[in-house]
Image 1 (spheres, rainbow, N blue to C red):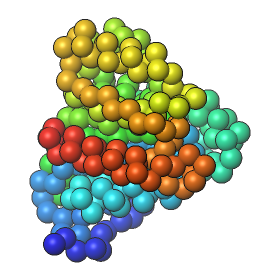
Image 2: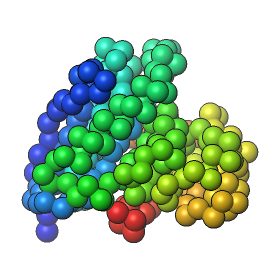
Image 3: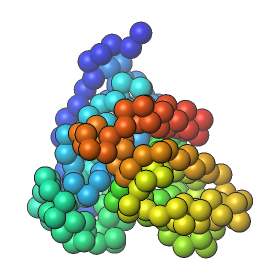
Image 4: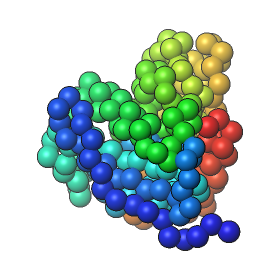
Length: 233
């Protein structure tokens, strides 16, 4: 049985001469050739919930890296929706793309990581970004998206890896029409992907938000996520 103690620390890497912070967690008995996961945070920023998720992945045998996409904005962590919305709206999509490319390069350089076994997971704002990364980052072998906004159907012609999409049917931010468009885009372009729906609200996976968290369905989504990553990376 795997030990319960994992290794975790704040690390730094460079992106466009900007110093980026990230939270790195490694398995208790880390070894060379480990699979790795990049975690893209919600609009709140790199908070304790995301760091805890990195530790959970580490306990499953993955090297997990959660970069701070708000590094260029002062590495802020929001505590209310107004501040979070301000940060999300101030985040340039080009910044996010370049900074995640730099995060991928940093992860590939880690001695414990198999550079050919890297996946990505994103939540809310991070889910939207992760879905975009799936069409741009050829280093990714699989991407898991939790309730992210869906781009136009033709975008999926450029999909570079399989995608698993989690959606709460009571989501007030992502519409059913968007999720249907994702299904149609995957089928139309012959891309590997899955869409799993739950009778939940937006952010149902976030256990720090009791007003929307669903323990049962979050556990199911976690099991589906581990199954998907286990299959593809």
